[in-house]
Image 1 (cartoon, helix red, strand yellow):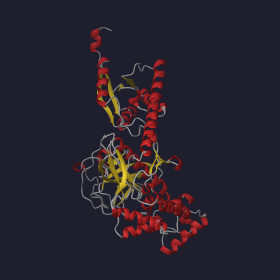
Image 2: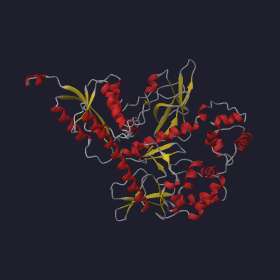
Image 3: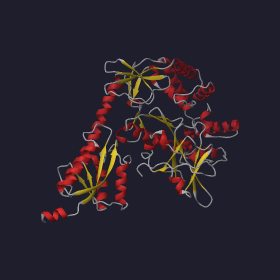
Image 4: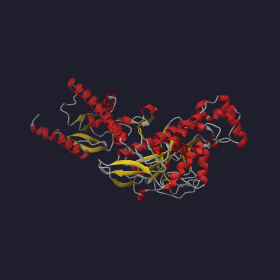
Amino acid sequence: MSIEALEAAEPLRAVAYVRMSTDRQIYSTANQIDAIAAYAARKNIAILRTYKDDGKSGLLLDRRPALKSLLGDVMLGKADFDCILVYDISRWGRFQNSDESAHYEFICKEAGVRVEYCAEEFSNDGSLLSNVMKSLKRAMAAEYSRELSTKVFAAQCRLIEKGFRQGGTASYGLRRLLLDQNGQSKGRLEPGQRKYTQSDRVILQPGPESELAVVREMFHQFVEGKSESLIARELNQEGILNRRGYPWTHQSVRYVLNNENYTGVNVYNRKTCRLASKLRNNSPSQWIKAPCAFDPIIDPEIFDRAQRHRKQRRIWLSNREMLARLESLLREKGRLSATLIDESDHLPDNSTYALRFGSLGNAYKLINYRPRTNFRYVDRGVFLAAKIKEAATDLIRLVERGGGSAVFDEAAELLTINGAITVSIYIARCTRIPGGGLMWRVNRRRYLAGDWIVALRPDLPCRNILDYLLLPAPGFPKQKAEFSNRNPARLAACRYESIASLLPLILAPPSNHYVPLAPHSSTRCGRAKALPKPGR
């Protein structure tokens, strides 16, 4: 073909995909775009647009909305381009299973869209050399993440052993103190604040004397025989709030009683979620501990007595005994609920009943108790609690990758982002309405968080989470908000398909917050603007 014909040839249509994770990368997305543009100019390729994942890890597809959108366009036949330009193999992904990376490229190839890696030394032409090099590069990209994770974990363990704290807010009665590289104090870190110099370190120190007195009294009352539930009730009666500013529960009291930080011990690696895996609890043998890391609040002997007391109370009950105690509570209260069970000093938690008998509803049936209310959600209580915790973990991971901090209070099901933004995480209860339609209800809680509500929308059997509803807490109806599949516009006004798509709006300035609840017979709320849809 002549030079004139080449110049007259129509450019190949393409899109660019760029990604940068939160760890220190050699190339920013801007540099990737420049390199891809130079490659396109040499190859007579016209770039129609760019899909960009800023601050996104390459370990999982689920947390990369731009790549998901790109693959969605390809699979749905909406691709108006012939190829995808990517800087190199690692930008496509550091998937721990290299077959996953190949699978996504295969999806594009089957749809008639090829993937080209602009900075690699080989051409992605399907040749033997190309296939071997891609397999090797994919394995190397995954191995890089594994090696980096191991190195980071080892460094964190060394800092823990030296008495420095790694991430997370301080517990009730404790405060974080920032130190420079010489060990000199630079002041306290308030909730949501982070160190701004890499060489700085953080330690724990005792907080206000009023909070220290509460912690000491908790331990004293517990070793004297009071239960966590009774301690929580007495604290609430006195108007004493927990570290989040909410009433105490038996879970939050138990967390204080189990926390070795109060004895001056620095503890790390209780839980693990390395390489974007699901959060899981580690055995005590895997915990990293540094004794005498900071000033103790509780005498170690008192702490050990509390732990022995907990173990002595942790007796195994037969099914017959558990049901007998449940019947006794029913005779005393005249009704049963998960809250009443948890508040009782003589019964295991409601989750223990659910695990032992398959569901709390099954336990009720065995003592011939029939609650009046719909009981499907109590039966699925363990599943729903796990889904709420999973959603919170995903949000925390996304916030931390963006340079922020977030802490989840399981007892209150409340997530605090950067020490300022509060997000309540709910389950939207699903029921069938006359005519065969479905209704999802979000009930108002007594203690409503100040900023946002994230409601997980399950299917009717309550086995899977369909998507997520984002509702501002200010202006929330006094009783409940309801959404039906018969009114798709109202549902779509606050529906999001993934946790990642919620975060930009949650972090938006308050001036951008709108109430997405349209007029409805059961909500009594006025007309409002729909929320903007980031990335949709």
